[in-house]
Image (cartoon, rainbow, N blue to C red; front, top):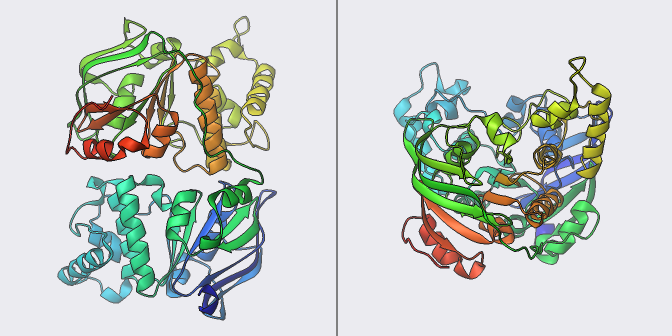
Length: 510
């Protein structure tokens, strides 16, 4: 059936270089009318660069773009929208102090200096209902969840009449329930005549939502296939150029003494509301405790309170029997806590600083200071950085390269190298594979399980249950800031866990 469809977009022989790096190397893709084309590849494969060229953010060094058979020149996002091309980027472009409606119509001159607010809001509600993406047109954007902000970005494109929609890693910030709603919306868009390019590295969702798949590796097209005619293992091999083990075996480790113990903890969120509410749990040496829950139920506040980034309003936190409730962050680091935050660019690293500096931002650097002359031994830092880059397979031109120039997977490897090279006794891993490709995910899984084998206690906070099941020894379900029950890490219990996540049922399945 795909062969009978007309071509709505052709990108031919696209090449793009950045500072000696070939991001796109003679790339050609085709999007057909009324289809979902998945653009699959590891982070750094060139997917986003190619789409940024289509959306007018970058200019190609060479190549051509055809829309509905005609050559077009796209020099800006405004040009792209004029040709019916819209893009929802990973990092949203919304004005937080504006309402939903104000963000959606921003820049639309045809509405006049003072738009008819009632008509605009009515149209937004109509689009939201049609595509199963409901939003409040009058709500200020800063008050909304990440999932709601993404809906605004999609509705903004639909409102402006985009017929070719680019969704760049759209599920990276969504809960499983929100992702399922998005898939339904995408199918409805296609039914209504749109064509969609779906950028992803997640095999399951590519298999579910796409008609065809084009795979990129190292800036080149590896191949294109009909989704119904290819397997996940085939796609994984195309992505990374080798066989990938999709099922990681957990090491058989004897669970030891208590490392982390939390008693009746209460923590407030950024709005001053109680987000962690009388929560208690414990994690033992050699154990991975997975925290399952819908986003916004206190997971981030819990992690930050344990690490010391957020004040505990009440309750106690013990590390290896010692009360650290009011300890400083540096004190907690010295006691053996490692923290892998969910925001690897904004919280976990300093993007403008070199790889080597990011590797030694914490107490590791105290070992690399010449205490006699009070200066940093740069030679020793260079040697140690080179060791960690090799040990953690960090793909970087140099240890002097700014972290912001690395792919998401390699930035995460920098974080892992810094946190885990200190032999921690407790690891707080918050969404450690969010936004990563399958090869990088495999590396993160193996690295965390190696720490389990060494006897570390690991508190895993992840948005996707399959990740929690793969790594955890026990699953604790969080709802409205409380642990409402425990379960074995077994897909057979997914329905009960889902009920607990939604607050419909509390219990203990162990």
